[in-house]
Image (tube, rainbow, N blue to C red; front, side):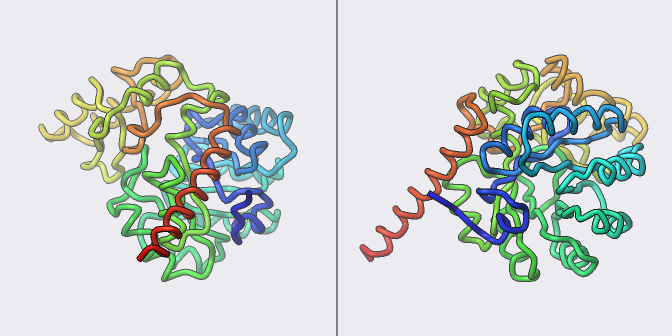
Length: 317
């Protein structure tokens, strides 16, 4: 059973499924496992210094000979050094977030690296297509981590209508129903983040996985709205404190100090009360820990099941 789109040919992958490049969560082990399973695994660079990221890239290369990518966080204090590292290491795909990758596109293209930015608006998507990106990830506000304002259901078809390059839907997708919906909206692929937190190969702390597995429909909250960089996380002590400080008019410096190091505290140390447990609204649908291969196989199988059900429904009308 195959689900083949232009994205598969562009990236050299079997299934049009990308794993989100989650900082402190998406390591070389997870990226390699997703790529081995036929999708595109992505290492999350976050704010990691080049030597730490290089070790993760080496790890992934040792575990798979299939394509994998790296998510470049454009606000990283090491962004220039990381760009050089990605070019030197011959990474095949770079996804980008938290900014405009325009100044680096020529360097990536010269090395044959595919560039796929995360976008949250039509205007940004059109601007990036003009400067040569290979595809875009249209990410709705349902996603975990840094988010925009529009929902996936609204954002994806608008960007599909506006662009010629493939569009990848992200935000609120965890099963075949979400994939089928994304395809119906015109997307040629999907990116899943929260679902892969509970992949067996994900090395994030077990407490973090348990927090996702136990999440209910209203258990996420958006923090940092006053900073201009809103972030969706699971409700906990940190979220309450952050929201209270924002409401009381805390300065940008105070909020930055409160959030510093909190993602690592949750992901590496397992502090899911005082740490930042980034996860999307779809966490409520994640109920099992499985190997990445099983996640992808079930995803594709369930997508076809949904499509067949819709066909039968259409024929009955």
